[in-house]
Length: 94
Image (tube, rainbow, N blue to C red; front, side, top):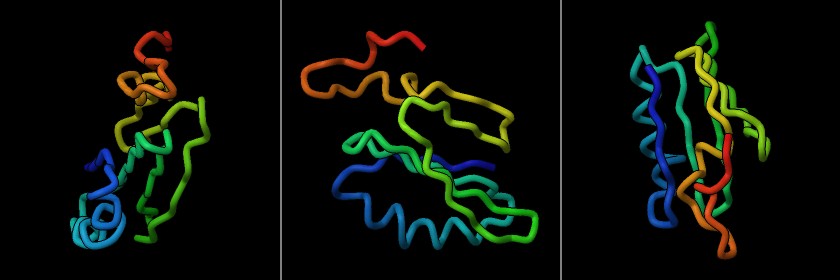
Protein backbone atom coordinates (compact mmCIF):
# COMPACT_ATOMS: atom_id res chain seq x y z
CA UNK A 1 0.00 0.00 0.00
CA UNK A 2 1.06 3.55 -0.69
CA UNK A 3 -0.26 6.83 0.71
CA UNK A 4 0.46 10.13 -0.96
CA UNK A 5 -0.23 13.63 0.33
CA UNK A 6 0.00 17.01 -1.32
CA UNK A 7 1.15 19.40 1.37
CA UNK A 8 -0.04 22.94 1.96
CA UNK A 9 1.23 25.41 4.54
CA UNK A 10 -1.67 24.47 6.82
CA UNK A 11 -1.21 20.66 6.50
CA UNK A 12 2.57 20.33 6.32
CA UNK A 13 3.19 19.81 10.06
CA UNK A 14 0.44 17.21 10.48
CA UNK A 15 1.43 15.42 7.27
CA UNK A 16 4.97 14.99 8.52
CA UNK A 17 4.11 14.34 12.14
CA UNK A 18 0.84 13.11 13.60
CA UNK A 19 -0.65 11.65 10.41
CA UNK A 20 2.56 9.89 9.43
CA UNK A 21 2.84 8.41 12.93
CA UNK A 22 -0.69 7.03 12.55
CA UNK A 23 -0.05 5.75 9.03
CA UNK A 24 3.07 3.88 10.19
CA UNK A 25 0.77 1.64 12.24
CA UNK A 26 -0.72 0.27 9.01
CA UNK A 27 1.26 -2.93 8.51
CA UNK A 28 0.63 -3.06 4.75
CA UNK A 29 1.90 0.50 4.16
CA UNK A 30 5.15 0.37 2.18
CA UNK A 31 5.57 3.94 0.92
CA UNK A 32 4.45 7.36 2.09
CA UNK A 33 4.89 10.18 -0.44
CA UNK A 34 4.83 13.87 0.42
CA UNK A 35 4.53 16.37 -2.42
CA UNK A 36 5.27 19.98 -1.57
CA UNK A 37 4.08 22.27 -4.37
CA UNK A 38 5.44 25.35 -2.56
CA UNK A 39 9.02 24.05 -2.66
CA UNK A 40 8.54 21.82 -5.75
CA UNK A 41 9.83 18.95 -3.65
CA UNK A 42 8.99 15.26 -3.27
CA UNK A 43 9.90 13.07 -0.30
CA UNK A 44 9.40 9.31 -0.27
CA UNK A 45 9.41 7.37 2.98
CA UNK A 46 9.85 3.62 2.52
CA UNK A 47 9.47 0.78 4.99
CA UNK A 48 12.36 -1.68 4.71
CA UNK A 49 11.94 -5.43 5.17
CA UNK A 50 13.22 -4.88 8.73
CA UNK A 51 10.36 -2.42 9.35
CA UNK A 52 12.60 0.66 9.42
CA UNK A 53 11.42 3.79 7.61
CA UNK A 54 13.90 5.48 5.30
CA UNK A 55 13.62 8.86 3.61
CA UNK A 56 14.57 9.68 0.05
CA UNK A 57 14.35 13.20 -1.31
CA UNK A 58 13.60 13.06 -5.02
CA UNK A 59 16.06 15.39 -6.76
CA UNK A 60 14.60 18.15 -8.92
CA UNK A 61 13.91 16.99 -12.47
CA UNK A 62 14.48 13.31 -11.51
CA UNK A 63 11.64 10.78 -11.72
CA UNK A 64 9.66 9.65 -8.71
CA UNK A 65 10.17 5.90 -8.22
CA UNK A 66 7.38 4.07 -6.42
CA UNK A 67 8.88 0.69 -5.68
CA UNK A 68 5.71 -0.81 -4.20
CA UNK A 69 3.85 -0.12 -7.46
CA UNK A 70 6.82 -0.72 -9.76
CA UNK A 71 6.08 2.71 -11.22
CA UNK A 72 8.13 5.71 -12.29
CA UNK A 73 6.59 9.17 -12.69
CA UNK A 74 8.42 12.05 -14.36
CA UNK A 75 9.09 15.01 -12.02
CA UNK A 76 7.45 17.36 -14.52
CA UNK A 77 4.32 15.22 -14.45
CA UNK A 78 4.11 15.40 -10.65
CA UNK A 79 4.16 19.20 -10.79
CA UNK A 80 2.37 19.68 -14.11
CA UNK A 81 -0.37 21.88 -12.64
CA UNK A 82 1.88 24.01 -10.44
CA UNK A 83 2.82 27.49 -11.63
CA UNK A 84 6.21 28.94 -10.77
CA UNK A 85 6.99 32.58 -11.40
CA UNK A 86 4.30 32.90 -14.02
CA UNK A 87 5.22 29.68 -15.80
CA UNK A 88 2.88 26.71 -15.92
CA UNK A 89 4.44 23.27 -15.64
CA UNK A 90 1.56 21.77 -17.61
CA UNK A 91 3.34 23.02 -20.73
CA UNK A 92 6.40 20.90 -19.99
CA UNK A 93 6.32 17.57 -21.76
CA UNK A 94 7.57 14.53 -19.79
